[in-house]
Length: 219
Image 1 (cartoon, rainbow, N blue to C red):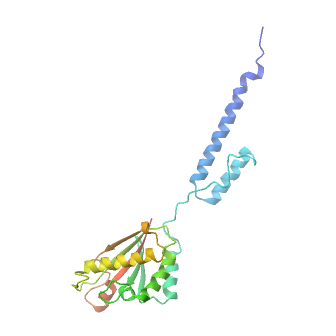
Image 2 (image 1 turned 90 degrees about the vertical axis):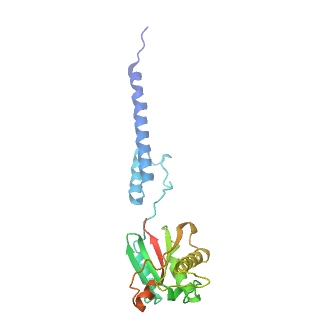
Image 3 (image 1 turned 45 degrees about the horizontal axis):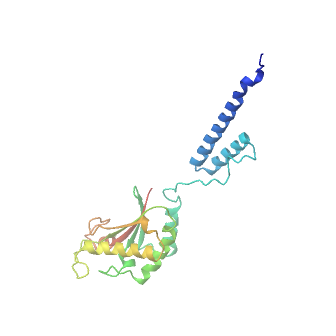
């Protein structure tokens, strides 16, 4: 008795072809998930739809894509500049951008009284305006306290180290507690007189060095 196997012996080719098609679909899905470009993602979805058909359940357009935050908002520097100009902070707040990120220099006369680390009432408005931008950022925020080189020796602050740390701490704590900054992203440091940005030989220079810096850390 003979069996006519005919086309049956090549049926495995159909299964093999289906397997290759499914693997192709899998790699397309993995590529789409790893790519944060929404335009390219849509092209991939459309291409996959052509492969599997519009009714396929293998690809869902509502796949959640984890997007990596941008290092800094492209227009952040402009936004900060506009804020400074809008509220006429030009004489008390300045901006700098370097390899660390964007640095907001705030002179102590807008935040604290002489020899004090208690935030002045007027400073709360300033911090509120800044916080509107800061709390929306994914970046870490570093708050640094600085002084001039004039020694201080009081019961509250035996040295400029104590004063610089206290000012950074009080600024950070207010932004966290009252303005909603994420505490996990905030750090503080006090530099005393050892990170001047102007000469301590003049009154103007010393006034510039007495400051709190808010650094938006570049990712």
